[in-house]
Every structure is written in C-alpha cells, then in structure tokens.
Image (cartoon, rainbow, N blue to C red; front, top):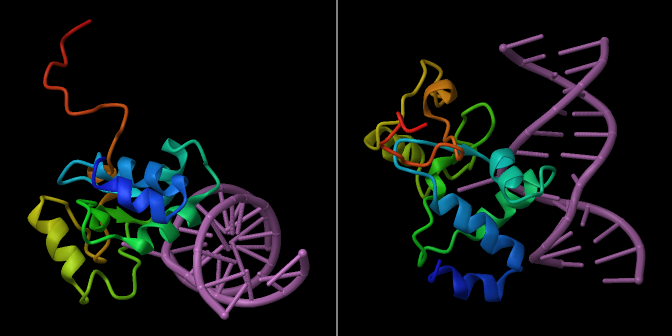
Length: 123
DNA sequence: AATTTGACAGCGA
DNA sequence: GTCGCTGCCAAAT
C-alpha cells in the first residue's frame, strides 16, 4: 500500500484501488480483471483494470502476473517481459494449468471471501 | 473539446 | 466449443 502512493499520485486514484486488490492475491491463486473490478466496486470497469495494470509499476510489489482474463488465459501479448514467463511464474507458485495452457480457474481462482484463514471450524 | 484506443466481460447466434 | 457485437471508462492523441 505504501509503494502504491507514488503510483496513485501519477495515475488516477481509481488505479490505487485495483493495485491494492491485486496485491491481496495470494500465491498460487489468480484473479480475473472483472473480478478485481467487481471488488473495487466497478463491476463494468474490467477494461480499466487492465489499463491500470498496463502501468504495472515495477517499483511496486504488484503481482500483475496473477491477473488473467476470465478464461484463465494469460492475455498480455508480451506475457510479462517474455513469452511464457508468466506461466512459469504461476506454475512455480502452484497454479494448476489445463492442457490448453490456460489456468484452471475452478481450482486456482482467488476467493476474496475466504482470506487465508486457517480456522475453518469456528461457528 | 472530440475521437480513438485498450492487459476485458457478457450475451446471443 | 467459436465468432461477433455491445457496454465500459480512463488515457492518449
């Protein structure tokens, strides 16, 4: 959040919201643009999320590689600096890929409702 | 100030 | 499953 300050200054403050959300994506999980937009309270601004991430400030600790489209495809043409890198990073984090090279969303889509809680039997 | 563009998503055919 | 069209809103020109 601190590193974001500089970014939010140079970009719209809407961006900072997206960035902070993306930062909450745990390793081994991925989120979609629409999902992030939804969490930000702008369900129809999926494109803006992508546009925000396009700035992808290298200074900040934004795991932009954990953001894919709704089909689990790693869309960015440059695919994080070089083709295949994003998939490799996600794999290294434990993200499961399907035969088509897409992320298995059913298994690896981040569920913001369930943070990282260990205790599940706590009614 | 107006138009085009873009790391998307949803719906219908 | 694919393909095309529409909605969306900030940035760039």
